[in-house]
Image (cartoon, rainbow, N blue to C red; front, side):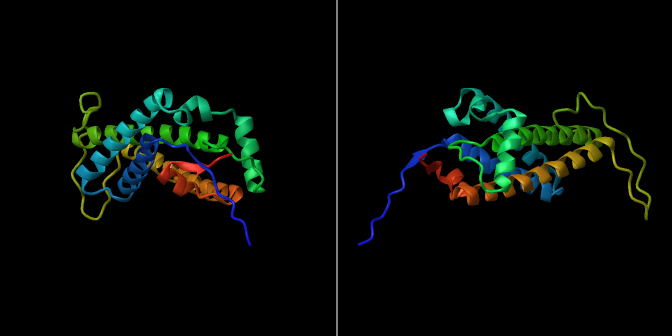
Amino acid sequence: MSSTTQVIEVKVWDLFVRVFHWSLATAVLIAWATDEPIWLHSWLGYLAAILVVLRVIWGFIGAEQARFISFVRGPKLVSDYLAGLIRFSSPRFLGHSPAGGAMIIALLIMIAATAGTGMANLAADRGEGPLAGVIEKVERPPRVPGRPRPQLFWKQVHETIANITLVLIVLHVLGVAAASIAHHENLVWAMITGRKRAE
């Protein structure tokens, strides 16, 4: 007769963190993939900016595992964790790992920068959006057939930051996959259910 070992799970991620995570991922990826219609792209950017602000607030007042103090670590711990993860020998953390915490901070900063430069571009290109009173609309020469229209400074900055953010997202997904294999748990499913295997 074979005995079965019951896996004990504990609640780690609260509802806000889970809804925030998947809402932000959806908003950012759809916004990155669609420049048109501009209203959709813009509103997804606003949504991303609002979500980032809410997450920063939640990082100070939210549940224990959601607070920055519980997962923001120094560069040595981050590099040590990554070195171990490459060998699939890094220690398991119930909440965010040091590398996961560093990625959260990096993504919050870059998504905020992407949204901010997007608003700046909207103001410079169309004279619209929340920064329209701060950044003056740039009057551009009319289109010349057969020649591309010169890009605005803010558009170039916005696109560069958005592409860097996408690279970070890819690294984040790879890190989640590696940690899931190393620690024998489905971290994607944990971010859906909010539950992980107890230590």
